Length: 304
Image 1: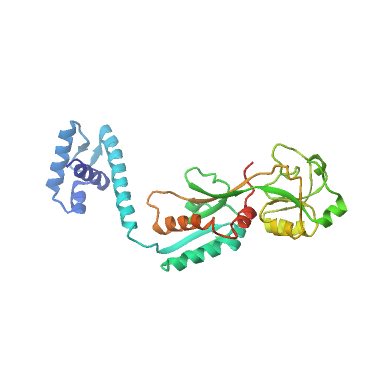
Image 2: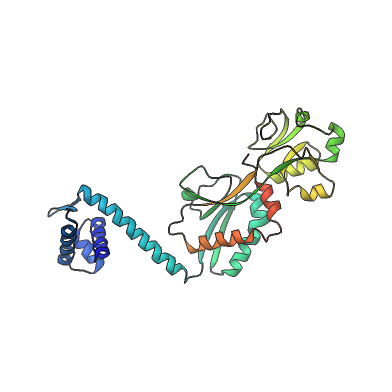
């Protein structure tokens, strides 16, 4: 009886009318009025001030309504969760992601996901900018680092360190720096978020000669391979070139920022089945994917 009365009271408040609330619930207006009166009598308070034209919540009525509304939301969420267990993911999935992540990893994962769930279609934007999923109507945005908006949910996917690399040709022309301080004056290939004046080192401030700044890690790697300078690259994106001798790792004890990649979405409340299913699928795909570490490394450059 208490929960039913709370539901009736909440509906009356939201409809601003006993008549409309009764109609929406398929009840008689007199029944609704009587139930509200019995509720007030049981609680020993007046919840509503009513005239022939208006309904107005009392102070205690406002507090009671806010609690009842939360209960109704929780109840609706519980029902939705149960219903979703019986449903397959379906509908349009909108995703925004960094360019390298999309090209080297996301496409394969999304393809396998759509094969498993044929009722899913997708729209994907690959971009270097940070996408706000609330403002842009995106279901999931893949971000480098945590989002600035604390109201968004951020689920960490993985992290990766960076190391310093240069080509043998560059080192033959400019010499091998044997200490962190010896980096001063060397030609620097930097990422957009790096300081333009100093090498991206944790706990050190060593001046650099910036010759390139870019927002694409693949471009920076290719410039390093061409001998343009020294670059702080994620470990795994440099691995193939390192193993083939086309890049040389410098100063292995030098500390560069650790990067983190997050899946960002508006809220866990009433999360669509397609979003939950894809997030779970993405997380489950990470350890098995042969491209995971190179791709992750290619994107991450944010945390000390």
